[in-house]
Image (tube, rainbow, N blue to C red):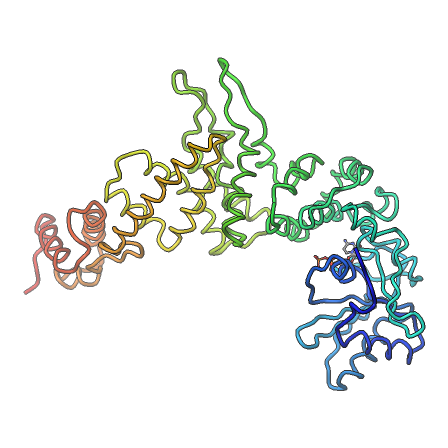
Length: 472
Ligand code: CTP
């Protein structure tokens, strides 16, 4: 890990030097930016701390850049912010109490740089780089954060019980950074999370869910979930997932541990998509296995209906976690509901009608569903996995053929309700629905083609059967 002042390439740094020296205050770049600079990770925002007024420093720096540049000032919190060329700059005065960007607590007491660093969450986040001319570019690293980066360790600068009691969300942040960076949480820090896990209950759901989503969006999300489980946080934030853990044995037969299976599906899908919601679908696809579990003699362990029950749980879980309840939730619910269907298709002779039905129900999400199902194949037997994946290719091909032929993916009945009413001279009534449904069924079953002529003929036939007469 190597740091030199030459890495400070952004023009803001020279501007900060001028602003700080003109005001005669100490100023530093701190926190996540410094960490990412040393780890060579990209960033688009920089936090500056000064021993004095953050607001004055921000105003000064902005006026050097452009007197018209808008500075947002949050007086109660003693912070200020401006955006310049797509970068975000945040300014704060050094403080004695805990630093949390999203805290609503006003600042109480001003402090020195050292006070400020003491009150940050992890050693790797407590580094500062001086902006003043006399010490420009100097790294201030009181807790050996650089060494911890080299050793890939997450640890708190102070006694972890103090750091976590300042802000219990930091327990989740520790796990999030461990997951994102592939670092290990120091034993004392980890022990403190286990001890204090219950305190997560005082944190707002929005902040918790934000961290959870960052874990899910990491390259290997299972790392985070294993830590969440091990520390006792998972059972508090997502008890349904905790309940997937464990294996029951009956007559010498065990089922697979659905917690680890789910994590493997999640890691698998992470290799093929960056989409947060498809990753959520992977997390929740088997969520209702525990209450549907049964041992059936001769058959073994079964989980009949877990996809139906699981999909019913999705809205409640989303509501509780304050995840969006619109299209994102509906997508996840649909994925959970349909996740067994493509795999069922690989087991039987594939009929065109089964393919058409799946296309009709999945609509434009068919590709996501197939990705989820492929990720769901987690057998240890490599041959078995290969065989399944090959069969899947066949399902994919056949789906394509049926879609090209019948265009049922975004199926609209070839005759509309209006046309039915118009043809028979009737008002909206249940017969209209019956005719529409039967035509839809006939198309999906392949009895008629998805085409106007054939559907029109069928409509006339059905109308006659129902005692309706074509209007002349
Ligand atoms: N911080 C803290 N305690 C918190 C939140 C933040 O001590 N609960 C401090 C850390 O020093 C952190 C800095 O504030 O580096 C900025 O916080 P934030 O922007 O939330 O996180 P980053 O560390 O920048 O990481 P990322 O951008 O990946 O969220």
